[in-house]
Image (cartoon, rainbow, N blue to C red):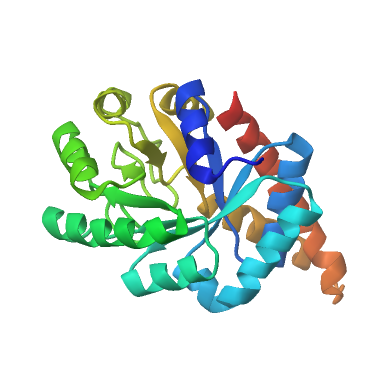
Length: 273
């Protein structure tokens, strides 16, 4: 019997490996994830944000993901990335998501606790994994700040909420970096030693491979990848469109899809090493 996502993440925690959680935005990026994962024979987490759900449609996105997992013979789970409201989380749980993230990280600590605890309680009826975020992890367009998650806050947050997984601020940021990032591996290790929650690295796009491996060795069990997928696809698509008058999407898009497959094969090898 296949493991559920909580069990799989716990296995990763114990073996010092990680699951790569990849965002998809359309059929082409979803196919790239399936094909790369099938080639590398790895389990996957498929992530959707509010904007991707609005673009694709909730039921369509879930149907595409479930059918693809079946067609490619993959073990995988569907996760809501950066859910901004309890209402959205509830809709995703009703639609069959295996895992949800409630992101109240920009609210005061105690309000983050209360909202997250509400989602944890709601998710029990679905046996769904719940992820939250604690500390400042800059989002696209925000200024990077080095306001890291403290050990004390992490322990208190997990204790008060009962959350399964926690995205922590240790020097990463969403989107690309202006300078090479430097993760606080010591802080990560301290948090890992102080709590049994699954620790999540957001903003892996642009972080050197060796640094990601070091983070996994020291407690990260889930690595999120989004920006590099979009960037790789669009760069390749733009290059193709500059050199062809082809109007058949079915001939133009596969080249961009293949570039994402190459990216993801390397990423899967990094997290499983």
